[in-house]
Image 1 (cartoon, helix red, strand yellow):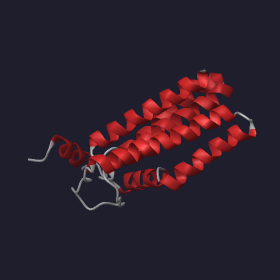
Image 2 (spheres, rainbow, N blue to C red; image 1 turned 90 degrees about the vertical axis):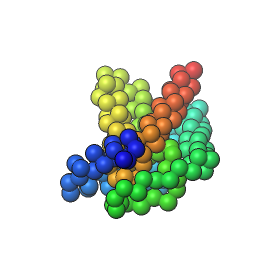
Image 3 (cartoon, rainbow, N blue to C red; image 1 turned 135 degrees about the vertical axis):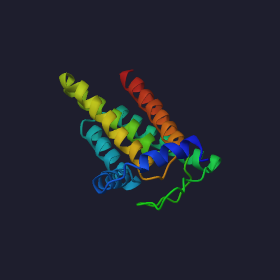
Image 4 (cartoon, rainbow, N blue to C red; image 1 turned 90 degrees about the horizontal axis):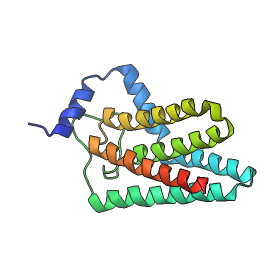
Length: 172
């Protein structure tokens, strides 16, 4: 009998369709390190252009902290990735926690907060988009079979904590 996490992944896999394959393969590539670094770079450039050095510093620090937490945990824990069906994408690092989930939760929230600072009446929609983007990233990891559910939950928790830390620091 498969574990409960394997059962969840197998249930998700039953929903597989070509259009969902395309949506979640896109989420995989959108969450890759070069793309996330590019988005972070744009955010840093935005702050630099506005001479908001403290905000830029917070984003840079949180980026390094996210890298250290996620990659450090992957090395320390070394949890193997699921091997339940042939994958559409390959990953070579350990499974726990999901970096895609962590970075998307933190980065999308900080971007939403920054735009909402300038467009406060749009804040609910911006935060909803941030949540939707993070869900797309995290659920994509499960759909693609490259993470266990607890990997994604841990990634979201790390990302939420980093976003909270960033927002709290920005408000000071």
